[in-house]
Image (cartoon, rainbow, N blue to C red):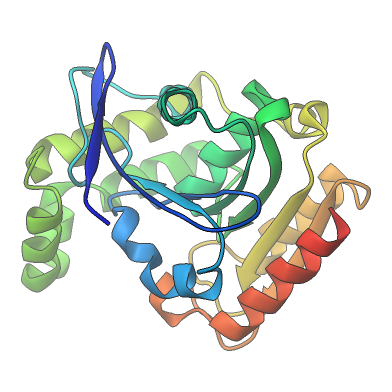
Length: 251
């Protein structure tokens, strides 16, 4: 589908929409990625209407803001749903996308039927903020892999990788002053599937299990996928598809 753009007061949001039957699906991508990371996962649910966007400062989406918060991203998600006149969606979010999905559900629970949050870091301690900000620096990315640096530079050409990484760091740095609480998730009453790979080296199963128990089994479900590290390209898609469909059958 061709890329479309929504102009808001502070951002130009790139998005695409596909047709289908049933509840629309909204895909929310991870930090320093784009909507394109969902290629194979989208195929699992090809009969559904699908909405995908690049977050501001990611991919083809730009912003005039000099810093961002996860709530800013939720604001733009809701603006897109308003623009498309979509009343209610199921969300599948990966990593940062899961976090934004939960915030969107908190902001507008009547608009979100359910949230699938895969490989999402929820507990943002000071050590986690410092470590992840360092990993999101241009210098670290280049030193880690010139090939990776070149790929990311191409992905974020509309913003420039320097600006894209700086704004991503601002999102994480803002966790020092405001972040999601379990009480926020509970307040939304939106059903949540917490999904994680059994070999995730960035978001250990123990953290997801802790959040699952904190939210409570009335609202939260848990899915652990075999032989799956953090990168979404290495996720067991059969396991994910089965878990999501079973979760939806109970919503």
